Image (cartoon, rainbow over all chains, first blue to last red; front, side, top):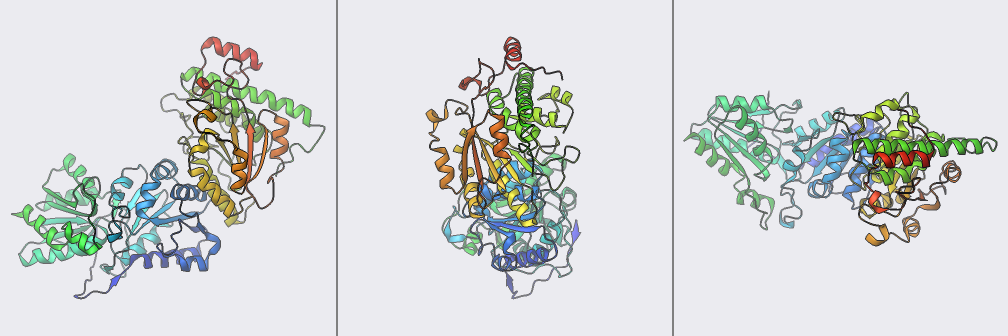
Length: 320
Length: 287
């Protein structure tokens, strides 16, 4: 577990994490000729126009062909390159699941999958374009690391870390604007939960675009005299079991919140640990075995109570 | 690049040797599937000459002493179910001792039913589900291009396997990037798991299909080591285009009771059949 200095202004500026990711990718490509990108006609959505302008020979556009895209990534890694395979998370993880399992996980290929615009970022486009299953699907594949950064600082730090990681990774890169939460000096620690806020009454464990909402929930709970610990589980896999067990032992329960299905993802991963090692009260927030109705991302997060009010209410159930 | 096939005086002896080595691969694979009571004998037998020429005919630029040599040619067995023939040729080429073939499919063996690159030297890709090899080979060919290196990517696919759409996604990429350092070899034995390919899902006109996807295509006798050696020694078929070699083969080739019979897709020989195969193939397996 690592502690972070968090900075949330009253009217915070919001950031699209794809900018930080693309900027670091360009920086890494400048100093390491092994860095390359593979896209599925996703030049804009993967924010790689500038990368293409700088390194046209290291950007492979396979067209709309996700199975091929992941296989090509595997082959590039075999040939000594470090490929970043970037596409909308819904298509990348859904259409190419077998390639992710076999060509990357089973093969232990040095490929970085960048699942762009995950969760319900595509809002009104509907469930075909939502990626509410990806944390559950990706985390059960052996050898595949799953990382869900919470803001532009962490996105950049994770990208920098990824260059020298050995083995396949799935990085969930947010499109939905989020405030900067972490200090510019933040150091990403692989496999470690980040304590965004200290507290010993109850724990809120979340990741990605919901971390800023969890901090808001903690503010609301503080008004009631309840000190909530906020854990940013940016490394979903391997899970920081020590941080989870410590939260179970030292607080009255754990609320998990994820931008996706409540089944099989972050809440499921934490429940697996608690059930076996230290049973503790939990509330698992997420989509309850349904596809989302029509609406933009803000509407949908509120609709499913994946907001400060929802997390506050769940935390109150655990402490009262 | 290999000089194989260029010295006319060596050719007859070399071809004769490659024929014997291909038959050794056949008997070795049959011995393995017989022992394991499991395997894909028919496809092992159809691919034997292709594998022999690639690995033992001096075509692939590889070094068994350095399996991860960065400049090696990449060969990907996309039809990963034909692992018995593949393991046999890797052992014969010196990647691991032939005696290790005895462990095929045994508990905790490095010789899994389908190849695992993290277990066995010489294996480039974990294959088994079909339609995975060509995208990987395309990626490897792109890597060589990006790195400015001269090594090449080869992939051996089945013919029924080409029903998987991922192959055609990869073919479009190979064409678009003009990957003439990529060679696809199709083991055209005309039989897939359940029936003949043409009864299952018509594959013809297969050569035309590859041509229309931008490949330079030749069809050859996949059981003629001289033709295979000659063709593999002169790649790409056409500069600027990826190459496709449709090797017309016979499933179960070399043993009369297995030839051209769908049941031998994953049929395995009895002890009597193995004895009969030994006589027909006229080779010894001593491992």
